[in-house]
Length: 278
Length: 288
Image (cartoon, rainbow over all chains, first blue to last red; front, side):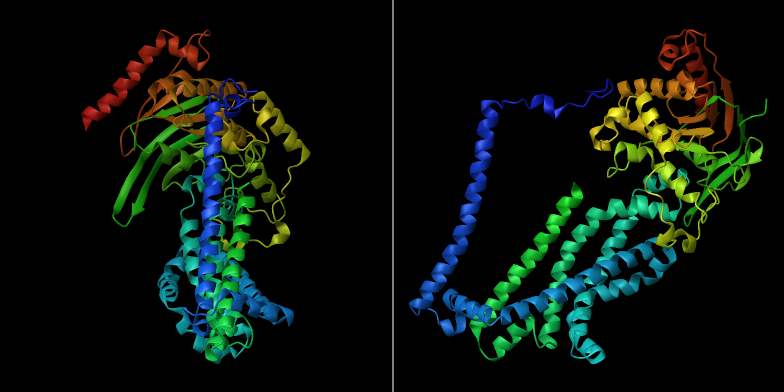
């Protein structure tokens, strides 16, 4: 039942049980459009793979250098059979997830601290900006010397790639919290902590999640940089190893798996985002 | 009778690197218990600053604010504050929004509580460890009380709804319930109807002022709308343009058949009060 003051139009009243012919036509057109997009999308991939395979078969391209879908698949099946692909993918995934969670935790905590203290944020700002704009791959050799040839180095490299930008983005977002909402909490007798737990954090959930989307990609970049330089396993290690011994099938296959891993991680956060929006 | 709220020789200025802005200069007035007191004045005359000072968001630079004869900082009186917009939190339901003030107060009553209006809270104490996190659930009595209020003001069906599902008038009433849930001794209203469309504004103004009058609350309303002030207030304080000074205090009396704001607007005295108020504000302009 609507309240007498409620003069907003009610969508449920307009959308009856039986849609009009025009509405049906619109729905049909929308459905057709979606199907077309999906078909063309799939066609591009199939066409690309088919032409690649065909050119390799006809020796129009050198499959030793360019590889071919068939050879990549064969390499994949062989590595699946001996289980080594799971090891390498698993290690890269593990390193990415650890560095991702560390990045999010450090970034949120640091951004809250910077928000809580105006002096601290003003003092640290130039340092954060400098660290953020520094190319982190330049730091990787330094990390190897400090932390040794281990997973720690890789995780530190990945965190360093993502964390500074993340702190700056979150801090900027936190500072833009509606001043009147803070006033509201204060007028209800709340402390800074109430502002933090009741307004700042809940209002920043969309920001934190969209920042997580960026971070997961950046962490993967960092992990691969780390694995290039110091690793005995992982997709980054496979790529470097394959290029050194000229195993192009292995190299391209590693890149394809990397594509799938990054897409899967991104989709995972998209699911999280949809759940949070509900 | 002793006044509920006394303001004595109050001054306040804002400080920025570019200079100082005097917002209020030596303001004095008092508000009686159960009175509906309105403050009008040109924009920028320090009306909102005055409310922020009354509810303790700002500390006076000069002068005193007494509640029941006790300085505001030491008083145990609860002051409710309604802002220009409703500021309902979109991620909370209506019930949980109206419980916001109670939630904040409940955890402050725990042993580690911070005094309610002690001004700035040190960061060290503001981020207490999780052992004393606020109690999430409300106690039965507060919950029943809230539900009863939501019922009285026609919102009981919307307890579980999100603020975006409510109309402007309903949202503003939810905001009023949030304020009233703390059982305030004094209610401060900072142009609470200004964000509403005209028709809703008249209705909600009528509605909210009757709620305040039935509950016999002492209220201070800030507005730039003269007719709104006349239609609800028992007395009206006129402030001059910046820096705000007291220009006049008008007593508004209507016959017994014109108790509600909408009836007052149609009463014959209305236009006389309007003219009087208009002149008070006008002569401020000409004197500049």
